[in-house]
Image (tube, rainbow over all chains, first blue to last red; front, side, top):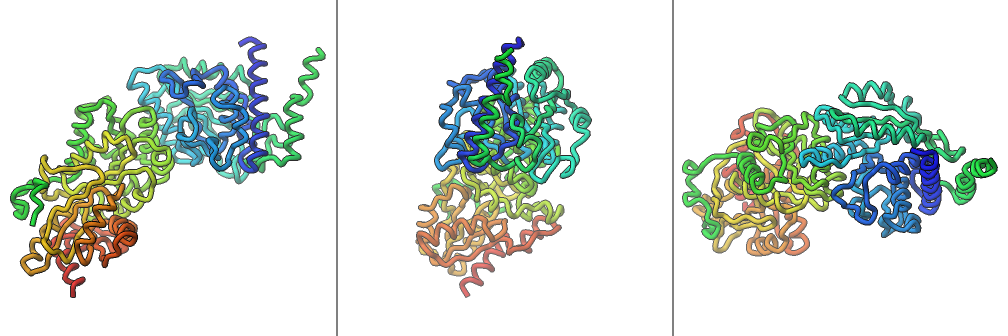
Length: 284
Length: 328
């Protein structure tokens, strides 16, 4: 990718972050840290990586994206709105009565959402099911499944990892948002996950570790995942929860709360000036 | 007398003349037929292909058989994905484990997600026999019927299980079918009508005092009981309520209005099962004196199927005793 293209995607990620803060403050509840940390990858998925058509969400040739950590859905809603699935203004209906943007995503509520999720640990198995169906039909669509790291506590995840590894589902790529936080604290204190690379490798997966905020690294990892022919790939994406807003970064207390109105104003200013980077770039 | 319109076996009271087969056998044959009719039909199994009779499908369509290993939660998640993609997955295990162990996966990835997974719960009831209480599912009707979007069917014999399997293969809805391990008399025939949501009155008395609403193997035992009680001057009618959800409120209400007392009979806990579902209907439309044949808030135990069925009152004699107790 050219530097211009990467910058374009970074600006997309920033738009997504602005929308996340905007919608969560308006909703008055929801998860902030995870979605901010996943914004760079969602910009890359919706604006660079995936085959999809916002005007025809059920397009047969689309790539599938499962969001196993359904509580982070604001990042998906924001990416979808900016990609043209629905008007950006509709983001402000998040979590409100009658909204298509349910607190946790509902398959029937909003076209393009692919599946109902929220209860952790079940997305990877569903993604493996779609990958199994696609392979049976000889189709080339790729299946992505985003998971949190906290949900790797769930046994169902490892049942699914074993299944996908056993069947060599090379059309399936799991992306672990390795942000090290979960509701009760740091993941390694709540329930130790490491050695994560060793775990996924031993279940028969090709494993790639990346910086989840480096869009070039992420796109390269996905290309590598698609090139691997005999096993599924797990991309362990190291991210900073709350990325983009200093006050939120790495604070697990921000897992499940929204910004207040006062915080929103400060956070939006921080995002819109890219922490002063915009002026710096322009002055060069 | 027997409802001749249903074209049941001509010698229905002569148990020795009837074929014996388990509902799981009818399911296994139905699944192969469904697979022949539609190539989207798939079989998913959690390490129990022979006991659930999925192996017949596996032999015929190996590429459409998916092995999950002993992983019932993933069984349901993968089935959800396949159904979401456009396949018609039948997901098999013992009912004690599926829907026993994976209820939340069923709730969120199948029922709320509203994708047409066919959940097949084998080895339900005490008639599982010597394996004992751990493997005798007695709560599955309750845990499935409470979920919006799901169809719940308890076939009465092997032939009805075959028809029910074909019916859920084409209904485009999440569905649960409950199966038994033990062989029981096959008293319906290929010509007996079956439709989801349509109960049938299999045994009619002219002026019945008692109406039995039964499902599973209890339907046949109820017919035998009704015939015996007739000789003693007690008139009984029997309804086969094989579809528990959606409940046919109209037919159940009409049936109750034709009798003085409704007895429900199921190989399941009396709490929240089929009998409770009937009570929910009658209390609204036609409050009727009711009593419940089922597991009386306890677990099963080891023994031969016949011993256990007799001990827990799931046979002709148990039903007769229950009715006489109610009338005295």
